[in-house]
Length: 535
Image (cartoon, rainbow, N blue to C red):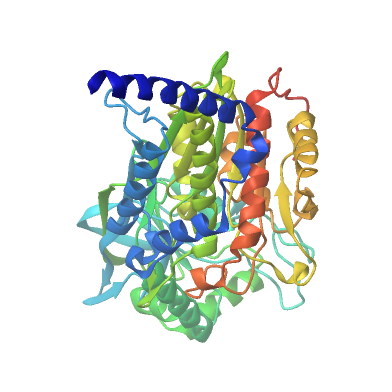
């Protein structure tokens, strides 16, 4: 019985093996591209951009669930983890959230609060309440024929100055003698005043706004709205100096607050400006020094967030690496509304998954690419391209061996300029560093042509999309990039960016183009040349 069974099974095994080998031999890049389907994209995105993910805010528990989903899919496709000794799919991005605790100024028994009574320009943490003296120093200017600091001791004191510079009733500025403003009014002029005050030994600066009381109140309310929407904390790298803080505090205060802490009136403040204009020079001792106290409490909390990496080792050119990226974070929940980010960038994330699966199928059938390919969904893009920046500063594979980055950010919708005009995709950056990458894109698009729109590739484009997604951190390191993008729409960064509005058939075609381009670059004989440096 056993012998008879073996005699039957052995020829059958040989037949099946031969058939399997024939199937592998017939497998083509076109066959692999067809494994990318609208249905699979929809299945992935229905999870990634569901309400249960609560907008995938950077460092949130829901974002970590999304990371696990992506990592599990990479593993199931046969892609390896490559991070650390444990060979994890997850690269910890060492971010912290820096915010503010107690932040107030006290004067004459009254407490003034940050974002209720004043705003900040530059902040030096003062974890304990510190008493000081406030010194009024006019406009806080020192120029060739004009100085507010003559005969005034400001060492270890906080100086109060008017915003801007003195101007006559005829429209001439005292510093220039013309209608042209000086550096004390242009751009971030407060930085000039801060630098000068620091050089004089002051330890802080109060900038008295030139805005009316009503306009400054509007500014405060706008800041309060931003605070409510995004919180009082910002994400940044642990390893760098505090991007919000400095060794010098600069606060902008309203005219009401200025009058109260200087023990004067708004009318007297206006009169002080008139005295300077009348004298055509700085006027000393307009207000007496006053005591104040200041506390600026800094909070720093670690954030648990990750880039998710799936690696497929190549064959004869495996030391060289092609990277395919998207960002899987979005902006979370704001004002009780979930920002699902189905297009931004759930669409790019699930496209990466589908392209990764196609490469995994190729490897399983014995057709691994010549170069290695790293599929990476990054964190913190919405907070300033942080995840991709972290990777290029802490690369798992040498940047010198990285051939290019193909970035997918918003590929599931149609913008107004292309409504009713057929299939398209914006491509940005493909010619900026490598003419060969651009040529490869054009060649691969011939397989299933869609309109390649390069309008946002224009260096004069006011949207500056080239600088606004994760490919840019690779481009800064002279690594050729191609960025695929469907353009903005009314649901961009709105709680209405939902799965129901995604055009999966268009996504399918766009993802297949990305696959074909990646496959060609990973298998070409020579590495892409870097022969340009366009902005």
